[in-house]
Length: 78
Image (cartoon, rainbow, N blue to C red; front, top):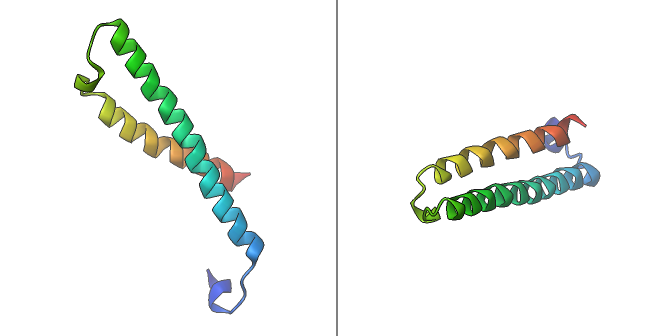
């Protein structure tokens, strides 16, 4: 961040940061949507109301955080 205080701003760096954040959220949304669809299909096959499954909310929260960190870490490392 020292380059910002020195008056130097590289537009390409800003575009890389913006595009990686948009890519990360898109991939994460797709992955979490698939996982939640999996839980809904399984609960219907077991004749359980998917709204009453208490485990899906913590799982969605946990997987959301882990997936975002994993994908963002992959973008930063490569």
